[in-house]
Image (cartoon, rainbow over all chains, first blue to last red):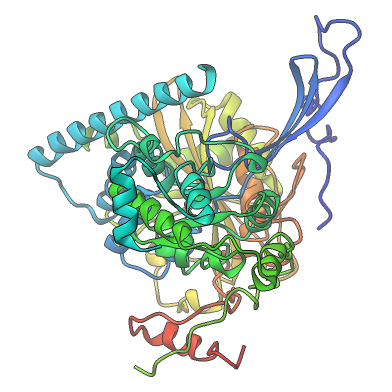
Length: 148
Length: 202
Length: 208
């Protein structure tokens, strides 16, 4: 299949994939195309964007994904329900226990299992702890990116 | 030089060393890592550089974003086949002498995601790796231990230029960059750097 | 769990409403045999966009949030033969012929309903793999349909920008299909897995 560039089609004319003009752009700035590749200090982790900039305003952005595609779904086809639990840890690695909880919820729904109350409390506590850790890492990254 | 003579001179305030010893001492105590965190092991790398397990006391304080200014690449995280040409390109852009630490199970051999169609089964298929750190993810102490192992390795480097060493350094900068093929990377591995280990019959 | 059942409308009710509102819709209910009891609606590809538009804008449930689009692969050996004696109620979610499938999970934010599940099936797995894209109706389907195109091979008509998302552009296969064969680049592992040991014996030193 030849890749098709993003443009309004007859099926959906209301979606403009590119911004046609920018209000407030200062005169004399030229349009610059920057490819912020997968290795960049401000993109934490691998993520690639092809950005079109006019001065400091972004007019067009095309993201490219797939640099960390580790096919958890394909592996889960050949392991048990419990066996694919460690992989959910590594999905969003800043708050890993929340992913475990989400996966456990879906398996319980499929199998019709009831969870005791104490387990629910423990789940909430661990989810909040990992959320705290996530936010603290975020603040650290901010200080590193914007600070000296 | 004789050890006894050395200690005698040291008591008198004269320090003796070899030129390569001095050179290696300077290099090993100021390794500048390339900030190259791909996935979960990156968090452990960040934790190692923070206050509790301090990486700065080994001289590795500045994590440079640009490969031209770094001499140590810590590959932390899963290397996918989509990302592999970029990794080799970055390695080529580092000036030699350069070192690579493969951190975590994913960088050594694909790790828990070894059954993947998009996962490169070990970064040492394409670039020469000096230190491997097992673990998923390895503790920060393990990363500190690997830096110390690397420092020991650097101490044994010889400064005397010989043909073989120059040739090795030159080849490191000309490693072929793998190309995305129809099903897999082409070539799937670099045969000069990595050979499949012989399988023992179970 | 009881509260969830209370706010979920009867799936049969939704199917009847769509059939009444959209001409020749032909919507049927697929029964889910597991304890989760998440029954889904099976739409025809030709009328899917009209049904989806009605569900979003004019239906009493106002399903305005598309949360997930997944793909599914039904190869030949996944379909158990259905005999005429078997009642249709036990049919479950299996299709009658090998096909690829797209599953949409819809929620309503205004009325706190959900999930309502919609399925669409292609005609076969080899050449007739087109489905209408629901991106004009719910914008969040855009990237997810690209992922399904990449991993399963379903071609979505009317999608503004259909190209590969996860794999590189020169890749030539659809990896999540059940009959996908991985490239052979295993090396030896010291733990004795049957399959992996067999595969790695071909990669011994000297034979690569």
